[in-house]
Image (cartoon, rainbow, N blue to C red; front, side, top):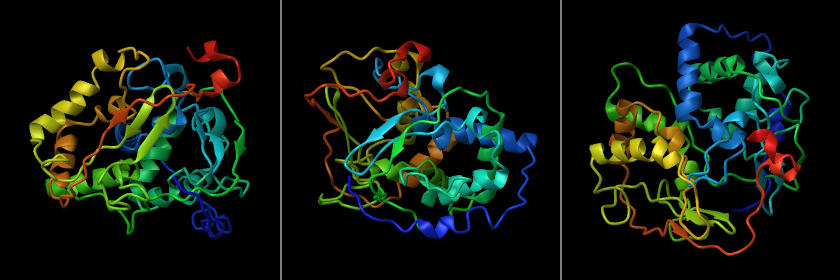
Length: 321
């Protein structure tokens, strides 16, 4: 994890200015596409929901889905993710919603934490962004927020994709579809080679650390085509089956016991993708150049387990159960 300055002020000057009169029609096609992307591909809930830390895979608390209040804290900044349901955003215009998602700017001109991957979202096919906005406007409101935020300095993402990610045409190849899905799912955001390592900045090389004292030190897997340390030996069938199995109720309802391994990979989320889309992701990953980088995915990490949910920190844990 590293800190630094990032020039986001240039976005604040024109937040929403390019589309001030934007009004999005909630067509059935947009709602269906948005529902699929939000709930299975883009992982909005992964950050914007409080989590059930008693479970093996730390899934979202159902009553708090998209209601914000998940704590991010390190030497860079401290912030709780915001509520993205109509409870908090009903008064925002579509142009203001678009500016927040793709420029990192609130309606009042203040900036979001750069943990919000707006630099990446800005490059997603615009119609898919519209679908996401339309769907989020349709979900039930979840009471919560606004939450505290304290940005000591700006967090600089380790990976910012370049170029615009265009949604593939209907006749696109499976690899082309997979490349788009890997891009909008933000796979490299976790699976990029971490700073200071031998694979620093290498796409999908794995090793980025997610530390949870008292629970373990988790590292993202190597997703390149390397046979020994990556997924080069996996078949399409085994890749799809892994997601479906890990996303099953048996796994997601499994309790976590102190001292035992756990996983912060949101299997419960991505498992909802169709087998066709998961197969396309595998097809694309099979084309990623092999990087030999053996990753130890979990090891014990001593220390008191930190509180990460606003309801726990505020002393009202029962409200989310």
